[in-house]
Amino acid sequence: MTCLSCSGRVDHIPQKQVDLRNVEGFASLDTVTAESWILAEASSGLVIAQKAADRQMYPASLTKMMTCVLALENANMNDTVEISEDVYLVKISKSKLGMKFLMHDLLYELMLTSDNDAAYAVAMNVAGDTLRFYDMMNSKARDIGMYNTHFTNPNGMPNDSNYTTASDLLKLTDYTMRNPEFERIVSTREKDVPLTDGTFLECHNTNKLLWDYEGCKGVKTGYTKASGRCLTAAVTRDGVTLYAVVLKSNQFDRVFVDASTILNYGFNVVEAWKENVKANISLNPEK
Image (cartoon, rainbow, N blue to C red; front, side, top):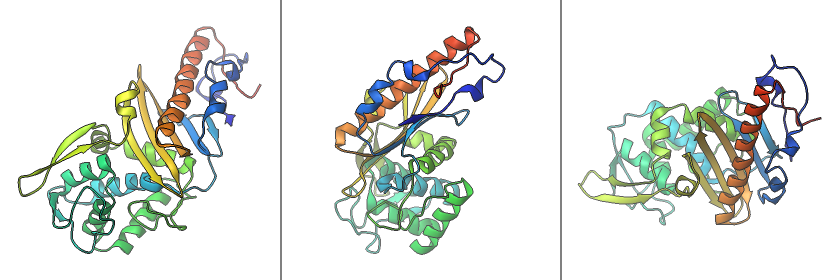
């Protein structure tokens, strides 16, 4: 695990050094089970701490962040989208064959329940066919600087050619959370999602931090056997937003513990920075 200097935010402050390894919570980072993770402050893009953040990893359902934002940017939210035979692949998803949604409503069902078949339905609606949608995903990834990422499906099911890094997912998190409608969707704890036939699907967000971690406003969970437990999180407290990306934690509940440990340290760093700005001291963990 390494930490990066915060001095870039306080260049006007005399360079007396403070070791961020002395900030409360630093030692707890060693308890994080995730193989790869990164923590950053949103407004500056400053990376506070990271571990193996450029290692190639499987994104699992974190892939759906890209699927959702592409739909928001390219689809008609009032289109009717059907779970048809050509997208009904996983069959353990909450959506079932023949269900029809307005696109806007389907995106809630996609992101709250992490519905794999819904991801294919979205892709088909947006691009007309899945291969064209994968091109859109990879083009958008390049546009936002995700140069170590490649997508080959819209839902993150295991595929050796569907990979990313924690550093790249940090960029995707920042990009998607700048979209107000995306943020509204992923910050929703639960919703009765309407179908076009007048019935509803009761959907609960898989991101437990929305209930358990003060200030959490998204974004996405993920899991396959290959990827382990994964999570991207955005949390705002006292006007400061932190992003955390956690990849391959070793248990379902542990990914939320890992994220909380990382975020707790991040907010302690923010407080230390504020106090040391008052004292005309910069922060430098490399000392």
